[in-house]
Length: 256
Ligand SMILES: [Zn+2]
View 1 (cartoon, rainbow, N blue to C red):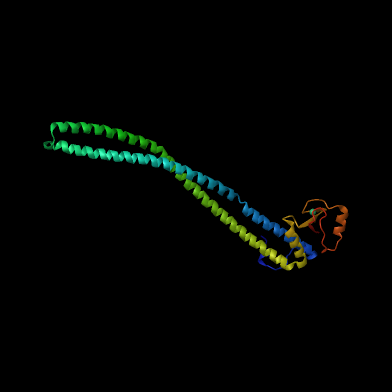
View 2: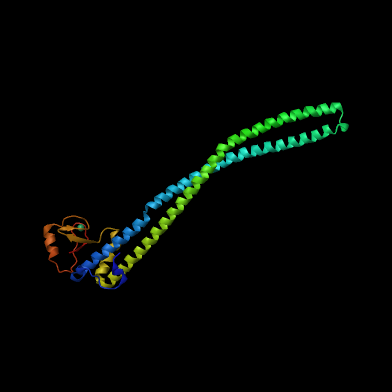
C-alpha cells in the first residue's frame, strides 16, 4: 500500500495526472484491478483447500471411531455378561461351601450332591473365565486402535484450528487492504473529472469484468495486448489530451 491513503483527497503525485484527466482513469482502473486481486486472493486462499481436506479427514475419523465403538461396546457387553455369570457362580459356590461345612445340616447323600455341583460349577467358571480372557484379547487391539483414532482426531482438530486462524488472519489483512484501496479510490474519484469518472463507471457496469481502460505502450494497447493499426495510432496520439479515444481492437479507453 502506498502512503497516499494517509491523505485522502490529497492530489495524487502521479505526473500523468496533471497532463491528462485520462491518466486518473488509468489509476482508477489499476485500483479496481487491485481490489479484484485482493478479493480473489482471499477467496482462493490455499488454506481453504487445506480446511476442506482436514474436514474430510475428521469426518472419516469420526465414522471409523463410531464403527470401532460399536465393536468395542459389543465385546464389553459380552464381557460384562460373563463377569456377572462368574459372580453368580462364585456366590453359589460360597453358599454350597457354607452348607458343606455346616455338616450337621447335611446328609452324606446331600454332601455328595453338593460336592458334585461344586465341581461342575468350578469347571463352568473356568470355562467362562477363559471366554473373558479371549474377549479381553480381542478388545486389546481394538482399544489401542481407538486410542490411536482419538490421537489423530485431536491432531486434526488442532490443525483445523490453526488453519481457521490463518484464514481469519488473511481475511482480516485483506479487509484492511481492501479498505485502504477503497479510501485511495475515493480520494482519486474526488479529485478526478466527474464526467470522466461517470464514463468509466458506466463502461465498467456493462463491461462484465473486461478492462475499461488501456494504456498505449508503444503502439500496443495494454488492455488487449494488440497493436493499434498505424493510421489509428497516429490519429489517437495527436488528439487533445482529454479527448476520449477507444482502442480499435477491444474498445478500451486509451490513456496516452
Ligand atoms: Zn485494446
